[in-house]
Image 1: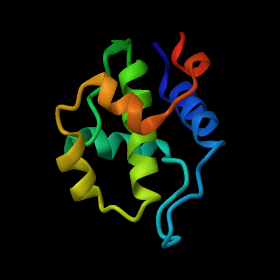
Image 2: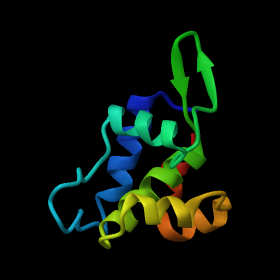
Image 3: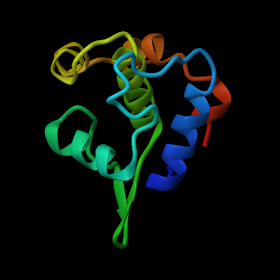
Length: 107
């Protein structure tokens, strides 16, 4: 499990290859802490897996979800469309979209 900062470092590393960024320039290439929290509030990404005191912890599924969201955004998809597609998606479906290197998925 990772803290939010560690998760975002992994998201950034996963997107460093094969990622052109969002086409309209209005969307961040890598989500920030605030965006991840908002994604969790709206159900686009699962809520944190656990808490260590007041620190939220995230796991492999969160990494897959965030990278999948950014890859779909780079294709010009809206968050509403992405949420409809990814709602309840299995890890295997997320992995196919996200294409995260195995080394980043390992704790």
